[in-house]
Image (cartoon, rainbow, N blue to C red; front, side):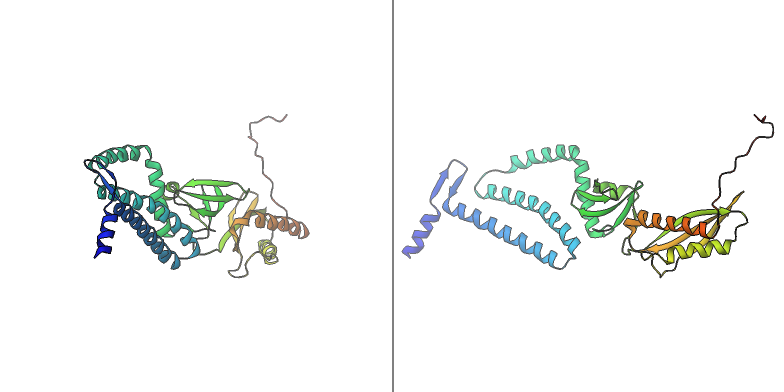
Length: 279
């Protein structure tokens, strides 16, 4: 009984007291215990979600939980103030006005954060995807809560606010499937054996180890011009990020084999007005 009274006396020992505020040893222990429980709870919740997620989603979940932590500890801060006897109504009124002002000033940042959470759960974009946004091709290296980092073919890092990925049209070349169909346009003079051109174009990609054998490459006749026939060579690769290099290698091969088979590339035809005088 004496031990109980002793503990009660210790816990109720006032470290600071005023008209409305009373801070005792018990209050300090309660605050420490509450913060510890909150910290452990958030950590366990974070691990439970990350354990069931894929590696790229797990990285983004970490950013989400870091963002959530701020709100949880803000709530705990006001809760502790209320426990020690501080009237928090004035803080809440001031905070509401402050958050409204910050909301207007930082609305783009909040849009980025919401867009980041949307991308996380929608899975329209993943680390490693090759995207084309406004004519710039790049590979996604990092998806943060506020922005996405893309590495271009020139090894430049572009920081894209997440709201841009939601609001603007974005071509994701490798979403759920790394295989893409690429094309090369090429022409030949009118009168050239089209079967020969098709056979030569197909050999140019069939001998390339980076071009997939299945699906098979295919050659289309695109159109007949005044002095040329336009062909389109379609081929499939699983390395969209390096397609500019692969396409260049194929064009070198086309040029070499066209010369070996006496297939001439067309040249522009200059038309003169009948009334134009010869100089």
